[in-house]
Length: 504
Image (tube, rainbow, N blue to C red):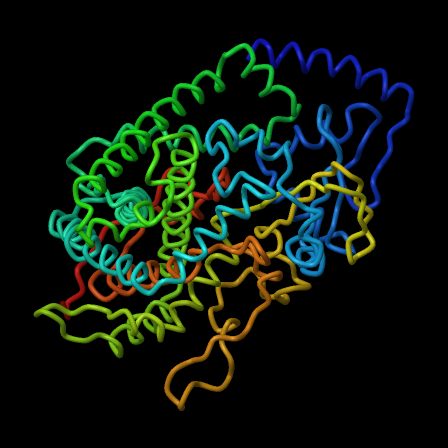
């Protein structure tokens, strides 16, 4: 705090000189900017509402694109224009890698994993992962891990809460659930985090801390501040270093245990079904394997839990949509082993539930923004000039709030906007084809999320299983606060009371 105060005192002196010289410059479609300090004043004033600030600026821009500069950082172009997004993620993909400034932000945590690499390093990892995600055996293994976690842990946990009449944090439950599932599916391990009688695992707490601090690096009013703090090993950067050490040690132990199990059980097919066992990285315990595992966990844990948390809240405000989901689930349920359950094929037919998930992610995307860095000069389709080294950010949160893209009712939760007017065979609704560059919550183009369909499978199964058995009642009636970070979450959690439905 002392260090930051000294910096801002110095900046205040600089600003006073600039103001007295009356040399303010204002971007046509961006915040007020000044020589040397750029838009620091506006950025600092809006630092606690960056999402809304960017959205407001973009909505006023005819091209839905703005540019800004910050002290210590280069020029940033922020866009909510689908044509620009397609250009960045597909048409001229090679010119928009993540870039060193971005990989520096997350490099301490993600290392050279697939989500924090470019070029040949990224292409090699992508090719290997893409092959595995297309195999039917991996999808079936993932479904079995999902069903087991829902039926033996999630549902009993919610049933206990309903019987006790106690309030629980649904967001925390879903995060623990998602961590269990991603570890089973990706690593072949079972951390059993959904046992609420146990304290939160140290690796989970370390992941949370590391992800939060890494994300906040990007929101420092003065870009270089986090680098100085890291150099001095003080404040948040010291906590980050400690959290990452815990993550690295824990993940390395997982890899060593996996390597040993593969060496011992070479003939055990079941032991080789998880994603790590299928990867060449399972044969070593170096940094490459560690970074890959961390990327697996980061990708599969908080994204789905965030999307489900916001949808559950939205459904408490929209009785009609909730009823339609329950009716869809009821039409697909089948008897299996004495229990009611949704089948693998049945999940594909849950088009209304998927429409609700898309609508929830339009309003509350798990990843609010994503950035690339221009390798060479370029011109975006809307005419915006990009210079080599410029940071180019596409903004799913703002895109979901553009009247030009979604109409005057953009602020309403309307799942029907994702459905065609003609039902399939006169019975089931059919999803519209929506451009991924208009709705880039799973990225698009060459970096499109490999686990997209598996994520929808997981979310539909959970939503259907929970709503068919329980009624969710929020404890607080206030509008929740959306917090972005690396993955978005609901500030303070989602406190609810659970009631078992009378037909169960």
